Image 1: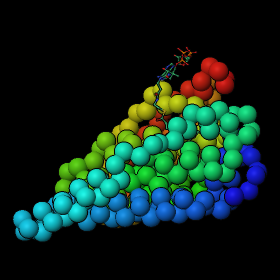
Image 2 (image 1 turned 60 degrees about the vertical axis):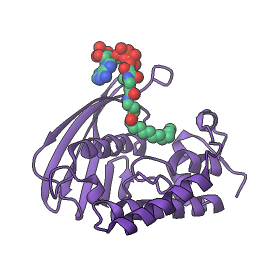
Image 3 (image 1 turned 180 degrees about the vertical axis):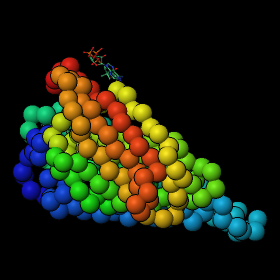
Length: 221
Ligand SMILES: CCCCCCCCCCCCCC(=O)SCCNC(=O)CCNC(=O)[C@H](O)C(C)(C)COP(=O)(O)OP(=O)(O)OC[C@H]1O[C@@H](n2cnc3c(N)ncnc32)[C@H](O)[C@@H]1OP(=O)(O)O
């Protein structure tokens, strides 16, 4: 791991270009296995002995893991703003993102196809564990995804902010178990208020539209 340090506007570049730390290789493996398990086990058919056997094995793993100490990333966040965050700090901030974070077992995995000042685009496929109505993605999961996608458009344009308002219009069914795309871009700014819009597409069909206002914190605005 190098001694290089990074500030807020180098975050994404450092995350994309620095080598993945050895522990994160393993954290990503754990997360990928948990995601696969969640997808395979939901609604899985099985006789009582099979289900009981799986439950025993998983409970044994939970007992083995125990309650490990956890890293508090607030200090790393402060380091980022003073330009002194290390690559390791950055992986600790980014790899657990609840949308797309490869070390977060509940995060839908996203392939980011575009991330620049003009906007972002991601491709993903949501499994049965994200289903609402049969065959369709749950509306709350869509809101979760779009909050992250619209936030990412902000970060890709080197702006900082928290979600103030997010309006979502569900236009058509968003299918599970098929590739969908999320897109977002900044449309304007008034002082600390940043206006962002985006949506979800299945092929050429837009299934969801979203628009919202992000607020740059007073301390940074
Ligand atoms: C680079 C770093 C990266 C870090 C690692 C990556 C992490 C990734 C993280 C991913 C994160 C994913 C994203 C997440 O999950 S972010 C988490 C979810 N969001 C929150 O928790 C936000 C909670 N709310 C607040 O903190 C405050 O209410 C905020 C900060 C929003 C406003 O409180 P503040 O005291 O600042 O506001 P003000 O009273 O001075 O008003 C100022 C102006 O704003 C207008 N206004 C006010 N409220 C709202 C509103 N809700 N919508 C629209 N407009 C609003 C207001 O009318 C006024 O306008 P005007 O009258 O001047 O025209």
